[in-house]
Image (cartoon, rainbow, N blue to C red):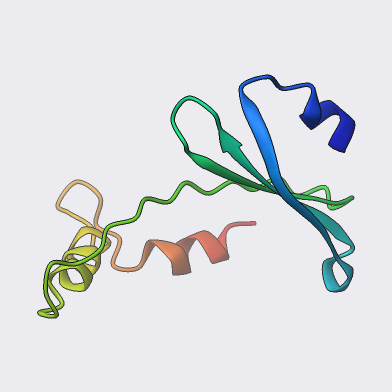
Length: 92
């Protein structure tokens, strides 16, 4: 897998390491043009997962970001789901 990643000209490999507990190889990469970091965790697990995160440092300690997070995840009139993550766990 590492050789295939080295063949991606838009990225540079910053760090690789083995994660024994997960029987995985971790790779930290950086997109050369944008500086965006990409973290890969490669293993034989058939489940495929991805995550996109953005740094959103708060301007103060009022907790507004956390309140907004809960408000957004509270659902709406059109999508009345109080806790979407609990509902996802119930899926077959």
